[in-house]
Image (tube, rainbow, N blue to C red):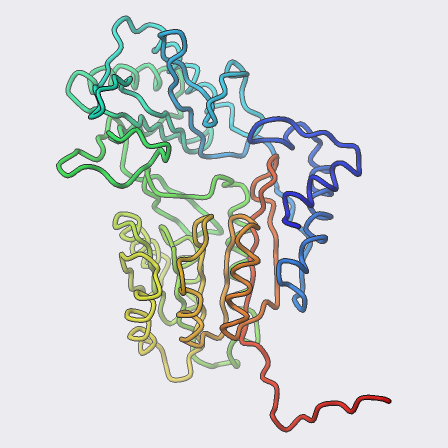
Length: 428
């Protein structure tokens, strides 16, 4: 049984109804939602491969509603007119603020809807297949009521469109002073992945309409520079708990003897260095790895500003890249320095043989962050086959109102069984 099925079972047994759409638990009181999630995770924890681990209860979200600091609306043409729709295509309840999004996000979408309603001619683009498409794919809003980023994802980018969106930017900033950064993101493919990175050669990737290319974030006194297009956790209120948990599991004794050398820490799929910067002062060397060049540049800057020694690499995390690039950096630390690997892959999990390649480097600890429970069982089987077992599991309610969970698993080398131990004699 997976976590979502276990959660539905618990909800049914308690006579609690869920809603349609991506936020099925948002109508429940949070205390009931959290209690059901905790019971469901207890039911599936053994099936997920945590037989001998210390499994914590699901950690509560400090702000369970209106927390989502990234939201988006897709553009749909309804009866010949453009409308903002939910990501799944629904157009219901668009006049009401979402239970999980800040009110300021709703104000942005309401302002853009008013601008769309005022349009007489609809800028369009003819695709390679001959279809005529509206110029706007998605509107993305990031941030909180204090500082907002608005991104227009478009399928064409020309001077007339830039003029139009500059006018929208003026209207947004007049209506919502928190709108600090406004950008155009060019995606001619119209991909449903609203920050698609693959573009045809020669296409302009992005254009600034107002503000800067990055925002700032302060977590436990560590300042982060975060690119406006970079992935970041959608629940900013929960990020201090997430960072503190990873930091504790990475460093707590007995990682190294008192006075021993500081660890070398690999932060794979590290983004802008969320975990690396938090650990910067407690490591001999931080190795940041991510596939996005701009994000890696921010990680390098953030770890250095936090006081760490850093090597930041732009490359995808594959078995080949792990085998060829990791060994050279273990010389950066003192002899006997412990090695800690942190990996926070996307929801689809690690690529083939990545776990085996990491285990072959014999790290002292691995902190594997799962953004959903679905990939846990497969990954735990791979870790066990490679000689590692889970010893601590901390689930966090990073996505309240939904059936999602963030799960942090610490893995250590499996205890070795001595060849001298005799098999116990069977009783007759």
